[in-house]
Length: 158
Image (cartoon, rainbow, N blue to C red; front, side, top):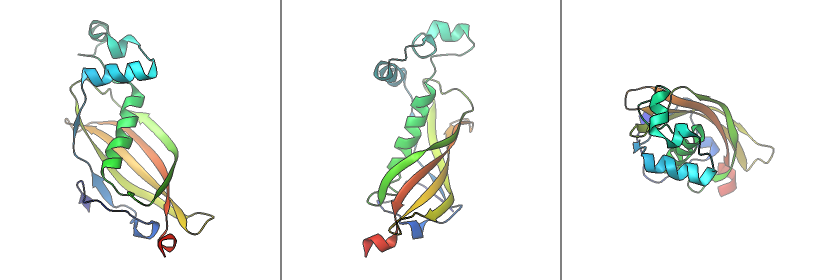
């Protein structure tokens, strides 16, 4: 089952179905957003700031920082509102792979599915692992990664 952006909801650990898929709406990356990210992070490498330099390296325009794409993945995932009131913490990103460049002008969406879940030491919460793919309009996966979240178990709501 694949769901688009759902109504606000909060999944508890017990609600997580392994293999359940989600897809977000799209986001168009702009050169201005890439420039703002460069300013924020102080990473002004010419691949992110100089279109002529990018063309000399085989890219048609500036490319987004890898961490721009990873940050966008988190934001798009948050828009799904899967853990609106059940999220406790992000425990980290694993197996991050930058598969293709994200170009200014690219239209991106996120696909994700659950690959693991388990109770934590505190039985009022659990750990879920998501597999996420950032996909451009050409159907290319530009970034994939695993993300681990700590969320409430239903017993915490009792």
